[in-house]
Image (tube, rainbow, N blue to C red):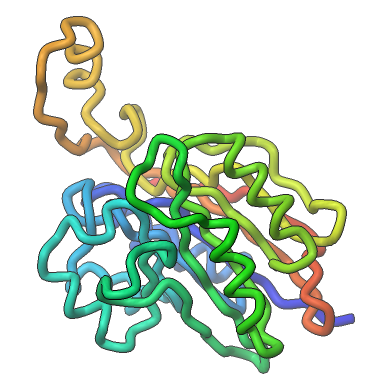
Length: 260
């Protein structure tokens, strides 16, 4: 059976993360030759949210689809862009009247890939049941393969979602916590899974933020304005290989690039 490849890059954080993607993505494209490139861009504008200009920048660099998360609407100007028809998805388990879409279908090389973004509910408020939403999505695929970016805080909720999607999704990749986990695997029924892909953001930071500010807040408990670190960026992502005919994942592996 023939295969195709998906390259997914974790949460892009601020200017440093965007610079790392600009520098490293061409090398990853050359090395892995992915059919699809998906990038989580929800923190790409100043560490919180995304703007239309930054979304266009990511598309121009090779993204076939952009996923978001709980900060999807932090930049006011993004709302109209989400209704522009571009392949960018905000969490699908939000109220139905919210701008944008929670699922888009991208097609390349004869493969239709339905890309969804859902938010977890443990430690994140205001979202509908993501498990029920998956069941709804799977009834609408019409032969497309299903890829899920599950933007959630709790590892237990992410792992549970992996099993809930096993055999129905080509991959379930966790985002939001910005720390790469080492549990990438192929689940029993053929779904590629990882609890968190990690971030594309500043090295030597605390989840992308200036570590000195974060340390001061932890040590004093005093309010502090978080600022994105200006350290050189790191790309964290995964490459997933999938059987074209069956949608069963063959492999998943972590990738990393350190910018200069």
